[in-house]
Image 1 (tube, helix red, strand yellow):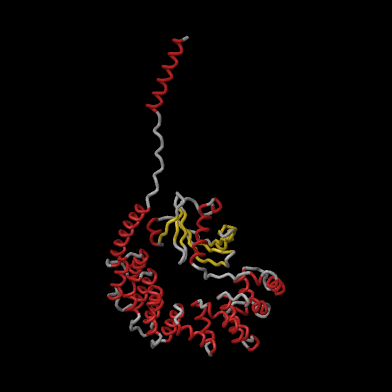
Image 2 (cartoon, rainbow, N blue to C red):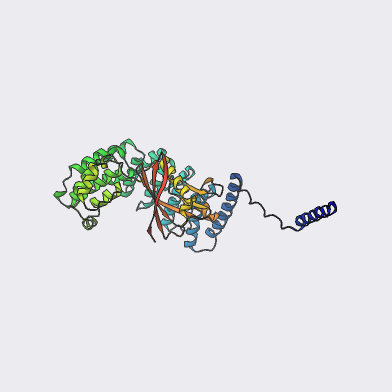
Length: 418
């Protein structure tokens, strides 16, 4: 019996040895994700190669259209070399006779947004073009790139020989809350060019003017003719856009007085369209239901706005990103998911390890990663709606988020357009 047991053990040992010698090798463990430093280095290498390739197109035998396309690509890389090249080409354009090229360079420098772009933009502020288009674009770009440091140069442009340039310079000063520009906007509200004042106040999102704009809307009698109707509806839209909740009641009063078709003829939004946009309620042209909502919870419900602070936008962006990483987003979120988000929301990528990293649009193109593009965000502090385009840009989705216990959470997704 002992002899048989010994033979059994020997056979078992030989079998185990054979299994070890001839077994399939184990699958390699998945590689560890690259460190931030390694990924940054790889990206810089790829960007450098892309820059050289595009530069070859610009100074090669390609067509002028292809050269301009390459110029846009170089600007998208947002490298110091990009700024240097664009600044050089502003002084020595590819086509000296084409003013549109200088205008394009100004727009590309604005897109890069670095203070290093300022010297070229200062030159653009003095561009001699009769139509003033380059100077007008430079006013906006310089304000975005240098902030309040642009005040002195913008002040000079308010005396430009071209009216459009003067108006743009005043608008940029108003965005910077320059005291002279703010005073001028309020004076315009009292003068003849009230529509012009409303456009400037809305563009600069001058919330301090909300009460004055609301008063203008309330004091304007729409029965006095076409211009009065346009002025009242325009003022109400601006007041709502500036967060003046009480103006909702004045809009409700106008429900049923101007149809959607009539509003289109007047080139304004109808009362119903304004209510739906800023309250996200859907009572159509039923004035009674609008009034009941207002008398109930409406007065205490914040208006929706696209002017959200950076903190709110980043929180909403993070919630969308978390949704993209979850199984709920199966229709379009598989594997690595990237969201191309509008400024000031950054570009964010959900890596396999769950980390989030910031990229630029050009970097995403170089890395050839999949992304969704956020084209709009509106919210009121409790609810938010986020518009997303898929990779090809053919389908528009809208995600609704709701804030619960100070955290934005996914509520619903809708397909708006194929």
